[in-house]
Amino acid sequence: MTSKKQILLIDDDQKLNELLKNYLAKFDMGVTSVVHPEEGLNLLKKRGPDLVILDVMLPGKDGFEVCREIRKSSKVPIIMLTARGDVTDRVVGLEIGADDYLPKPFEPRELVARIQTVLRRLAPLPSAAPAGFLQSDGLTVDLAKRTAALKKRELGLTTTEFEVLLFFLNNPGVVLSRDRIMEYLKGIECEAFNRSIDIAVSRLRRKLKDSAEKPKFFKTVWGEGYLFIGKVAHVPV
Figure 1 (tube, one colour):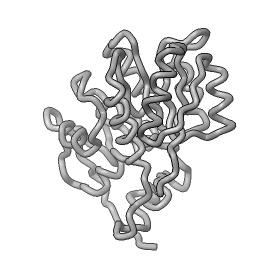
Figure 2 (figure 1 turned 135 degrees about the vertical axis):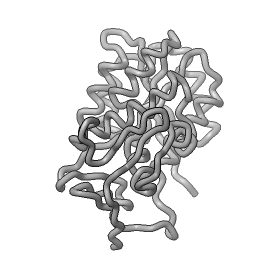
Figure 3 (figure 1 turned 60 degrees about the vertical axis):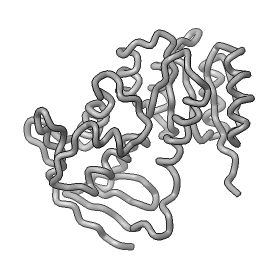
């Protein structure tokens, strides 16, 4: 029997909070909701939820600022909610480390699907899956712990960034289009002209200290997608 997933909801709409709390309970999810961002940040430290649902429009401190604060110390998956449906809001959310976004108003069942997709990326590897490490020029990915380090310095990747990196490492020398990466991720909304993929690759480049002009890991293939150009070795346990 799987343990109930714990969700931290930070949104100043109390009516929506109650609705989501009751609805998500049907899917074996426990929801703790707060209306003030500081209270949410304190609860995050105390309880360590499995996922955070974070509204952009909050009193005193907006969701972008809260997301940045969370990312300073935590890799917990974050789904952002935006009332304005503004593509710019969603792009900014992804750039600062959110794993997904959902514009308001939304169907609760769609939020459930997003939560399940993000949490599925965090699920432990099945016993038949390859364990060990993937290595490429100072980059080491621990498949069991789902962490990545560059020259033994942990990169602190978000769930989405880790999955994108893993997809490239499993397909070295293959041009991966944005559509193919989106299909692999299964869940991030295909809006903003697939900007979410460009953002994920850009964040990976920054953390890997990789240059788009003189790439060591990721090469942009204009009009087609991206190519992982490093040599990849699988090191078993």
